[in-house]
Image (tube, rainbow over all chains, first blue to last red):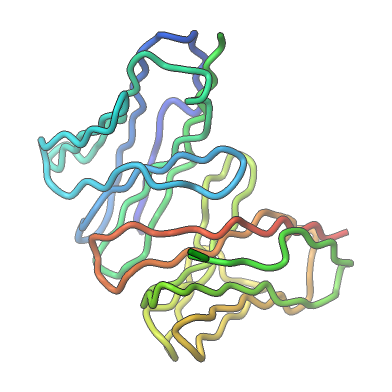
Length: 110
Length: 113
């Protein structure tokens, strides 16, 4: 059975801090890893990673995948209160199913 | 752009009642799925479909039925609601390719009393 473990489960930081969120996985026939941001409503897509070592970047957010060690990290630099959310990691295997981790609750205090 | 539309947004049911949560997408996506989200549990897959006429069980299928008669619609039926089914339900869709993002509906908050 596919498995995704995120850490930490919650994190409280001050505005301006840099944070690193972790995602490790076990999946049959790995195809992709996805990161989502959820702010009280539907998850919104951030990144999709399929190859090791290639950083995806969008503004202050970046992510990278290590397929050998089976993990990914999501970095957020210069955090803002608007970054407060649950960050979800999901992996897709060969059967189209997305398996999600439990998420990391990030709280950014002013 | 409608994307993925779920109805209703909120629902209260009595134990034993049945109901259908509706999900429709207008992006011609092959793959659709239903998740439930409970505090501290992330998103758990209930049922999914890889195309019209094809459905399969996810991680937590008990107490739920689905059907996929058209590409656009993927309703989720609760046969006899139980308090354990109190949750937020999300429908998602994606293209019929493996390396593609999933788009989510806005969710249905269901309370079973």
